[in-house]
Length: 196
Image 1: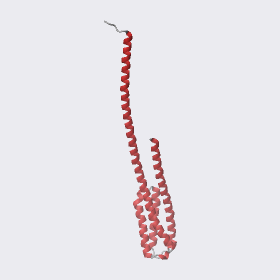
Image 2: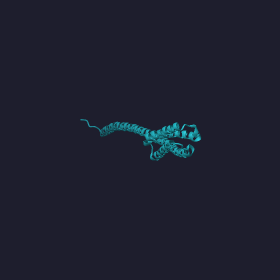
Image 3: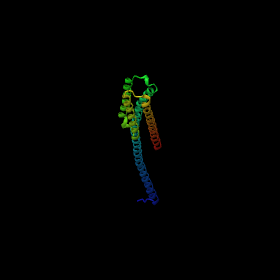
Image 4: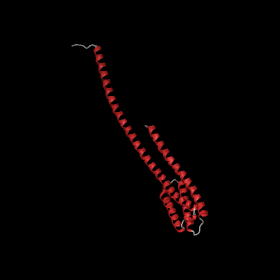
C-alpha cells in the first residue's frame, strides 16, 4: 500500500479549508447582499411613505390656511363695498335718495354679516374678534341709516373711520397669515430637501 506524503495531506487539507472558507464567504456575501437589498427596498418605501405623509400634511395645512385667507378676502371685500358707499354718502349726502340709500346700506351690511357668519370658523381668535367688531360697526351703520333725518357726515363719518381702522388691522393680519403660509411651506420643502 502506498503512503501519502504528509506534505500532500497538509496541502490537500489547506486546499479544502480554503475552498470551504471561499464557499462560506460566497454564501455569506449573497446573504448579506439579499439583506442589503431588502434594507434598501425598506428605506425606499419609508422615503416614499414619508413623502406621501408630508404631501398630505402640507395639503391639509395649505387647505386650512387657504380657507383662512379666503375668509379674510371675503370679509374684506364685503367691508370695502360698504366703506366705498359710505365715502360717497359722506362726500355728497344730498346725492342719494334716503329710502334707496337705507335699503342699499342694509344690503351691504347684511353682506358683511353673512360673510362673517360663513367665515368666522376659519379665523384665529384675534382675527375673529376684529371681524366681529367690523360686523358690529357695519350693523351700527344700518341702524343709523334707519333713523329719519340723520346727518350722514356727522353720524356716519366717525363710524366709517372706525371701520377703516378695523379693516386696516384685519388686512394686516391677513398679510401676516399669508406670509406665515408661504414661510411654513418653504420651511417644509427645505427640510424635505435636506432629508433627502
